[in-house]
Image 1 (cartoon, rainbow, N blue to C red):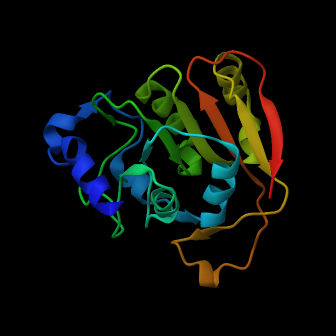
Image 2 (spheres, rainbow, N blue to C red; image 1 turned 90 degrees about the vertical axis):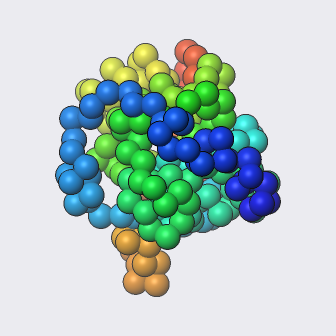
Length: 206
């Protein structure tokens, strides 16, 4: 699988200047985004999602961190493009600012746990980066459902399914799961299908 991913990704990853398309300046500087703590996602979260949803064989993990989600996807046979603003020893070593860039001619799905402060921007950018009918799955706090700005976004871009974790899943600061004992935050997978305009369905996992 690793050999397939490396060889299959050359057109996208091998030549950064030709494959990245700048979508316009973000309101946030690179320095501002780098100041925020990195929270890694418990791999079980990805395993649970894959029992419920089918995805395109090619997946872009655009905030891959140390690869906690990407590795589960690879183990399940997906070709994974793994990028991040900060290189943490996994994925493409050249940083990619997802809020400013996308991949040319990308036809797959996007799955990630975005920096929560920029979660709405990540969702908007992801939907702009996939083709109609393709999926965007974001691991987000349940509180993402709140807020007037997000309400307006949801009315125009409803998720197709929201998978609420009935037992708490863990996100560890700086990827240090051994130091993380708290499960104080409720999370869910929000799954969009580009072009979907119906009412979201809520399901429970875990």
